[in-house]
Length: 529
Image (cartoon, rainbow, N blue to C red):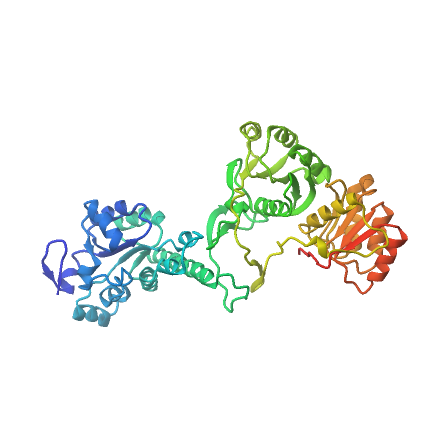
């Protein structure tokens, strides 16, 4: 027999069944919980609750009983144990379609729980504090919450499980109209398991710490930021998810603030990510113009407006309809230049008021502001293939220029050396087989994504045109034959940089010496497939 917290009367299971349904509310995020609780009470539900949720509801004057009145056992171990009790989990896991389960509830004085609203301790936010201790972090690992959510989700046919305040309104509507249907219950259960799974993945990442080992079982968490109009093509559905991490938020396009313009598309996000990533190696004012994830122009200069002009000059035809990334706040002068060309997206750390006013006149132009203070720790890069994933550590570390070796008779001039370093950093952001021509810290031609390196050289030379003469060349991997370098020499390049390591390196070096050009071997490849 149990005592009703509403009127103090005794009742058995058979007496209570038509009386009212019981809901357990235990949430860290209390957004909307008072209105949800009032709505349940108005519909005849009995409420039980824990800790802070109980205090908030009681203070709001909402009829609610503490969980301890059900368990007849106090919260212990500083709140570590409060809902881990048979009278809670029996109430959550009982199948009400089985007579033996109903008899067991009646025998042990357990009231079924038909709705659970719960969300978890903010572990992700807590461990972003660089001063958090391990013991304080582990105290934020929720145990009772996930256990209740999983039990409720397993028994979704008999228990409504809610992990997001965004669901409260629809559930009240459904209950007011009669019942939450089985399809809806199943969808809520799926979301609940995903919620707990993401939480556990973040905890796992934190406990893994700085280990560079690839875990035997890889889990990662992501939260949907938006549903996209379509994918790469209109017949494909798509959505964007932001990776959740225990580190500092990483400056990336999904963490950027969209200040203006149309909704971002799947292709916009891919191109924007490539554009922003292509600036990673540059500290001076730099502008990148990307089309179909390939930098068609990139330049660095003292002023942003000069860098923009030279970036567009890298391939003016391809720049049309492209994505522009800038690593400085966009000023009015640069904005004027941007406004003269049709672009899809502009990404920058900020926009001056005058620049924003001018660019904001273009209704469709998407303006993204990226927070440069967001610097996350190195993470794995994950790429989907049919039936699984490929995982690697990212190719983001700066190269050590002191390891480079001049392998030709002629040393590069100081100007050539500067341009070679620039071209090498650009090359890292270009799809292999990557060839970059550059001069005066600006890209003059790019060849990429070809099945052979010679074809990439020809494309880069074609893009550069007359500007090929006097340019330097960067190749993301070694030349397997001398023909690629010889094709670049014929159009006037004066120096080259490549990893080296081919069995025919001697032939390639001989071709460079014959043409009296300088060549550097870096000893490191930068494929980007």
